[in-house]
Amino acid sequence: MARDILHDNVMVLKFEQAIIEFLEAYAKGYQNSPDGLDTQVIVDNRGRHYQLLRVGWPNKKFIHFCVFHFDIKDDKIWVQVNETEELIVDELARRGISPEDVELGFQPEYLRKVVA
Image 1 (tube, rainbow, N blue to C red):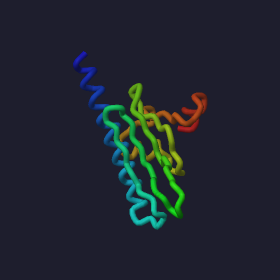
Image 2: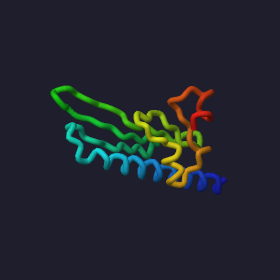
Image 3: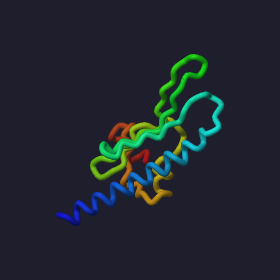
Image 4: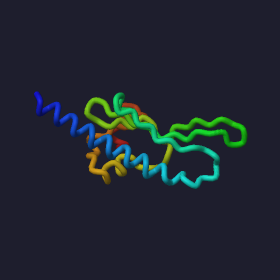
């Protein structure tokens, strides 16, 4: 029992590290963006939610845009939002995450394994 808890904690930390590393690296691409938007990496360790947001008031119009949203649940990384052309499964695989550990939550269940 203790071994299972330890394994689960190690797995969650590995998932979390890969997600945060990816989000922070992607956020750097917005550093000198002239669009007037702030880029925020949101990390909720307790709820296991991770997001990359773009927020601001360009041209007097409020923008709150979720670029990526990941959750860790059911022993997997769930990609809830990907508003880019990035192949998330490949990006996470480069960070040591098996494709079998990733679910594309924004896809209908019957497409998830086909697309991943």
